[in-house]
Amino acid sequence: MSIRSQLLKGILDGCILAVIAEESVYGYELSRKLQQVGLSDVSEGTIYPVLLRLQKNGMIEGEMRPSDSGPNRKYYDITAQGEEALEMIQEEWRILVNPVNELLQRGRINERETDD
Amino acid sequence: MSIRSQLLKGILDGCILAVIAEESVYGYELSRKLQQVGLSDVSEGTIYPVLLRLQKNGMIEGEMRPSDSGPNRKYYDITAQGEEALEMIQEEWRILVNPVNELLQRGRINERETDD
DNA sequence: AAATACTATATTGTTTAACAAGATAGCTAT
DNA sequence: ATAGCTATCTTGTTAAACAATATAGTATTT
Image (cartoon, rainbow over all chains, first blue to last red; front, side, top):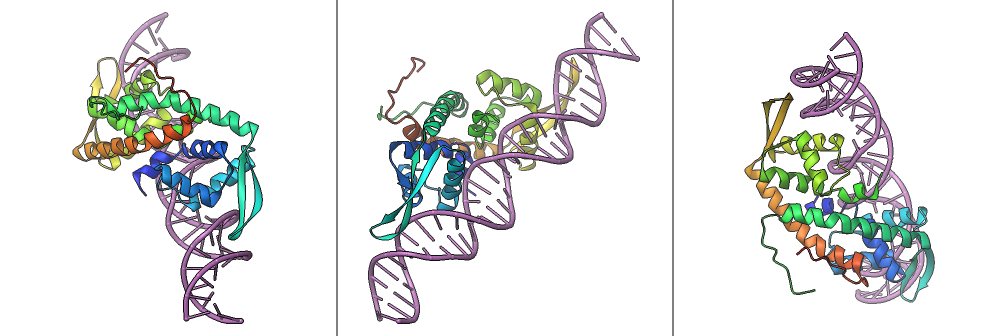
């Protein structure tokens, strides 16, 4: 198991909720989107259980829709409760990132990029 | 269980290694240090198992030393192997932080503080 | 039309992390 | 001695990530 998959623990729910909050997606598409943004180790075996759990907990709602070219797809939308949860996760993430950056990059030149 | 404890998953090893890389610490002291930097939910029940696991895996070495005022303390130092592992974790963290920030803060004004 | 490949969802079983709770024990103060 | 603080360690629970696999519809090739 890669180190990154360990780091992933606990933030995957938030990432998935964030994507679904932007637009309806289905699982197969979601796994590709996450890979595109750089979360390259996330496979279907990981994503589908997360989606089912988020649905069970009322964070998202799934709806089967036919596809023009392939099997049916289950599109997920975020619920009001899911949006609340996402905001809490975003808040917790902001609280966590600074101390961890501080610890892990202490004594290191802050090689920032020009992307903000 | 708090959301933050979920977010913690997978990054605690790195945080602990980072502290020990700076100086010898013992578990009880470490838990206070982590709380000071903002990782406030980390208790002894969490830290001691991590320390024992890191020691078992050769990342750190523990040595019992007497205390002036209280029971013996087990001071930990990082090993060469632990330093390598820490560098890998730091690298993985850097790779992970940007995509996750991107996802979780998309569409949000980047309310940065003046602390850098 | 049969076989293969791709799209798509779901489940099962394994490993491992965080953690609450509690056991153990030494030192300090009353 | 009793209580409280310091300090380490263990046990048992919950839950997350994930590999592996099952299932099935659609598309492509032969």
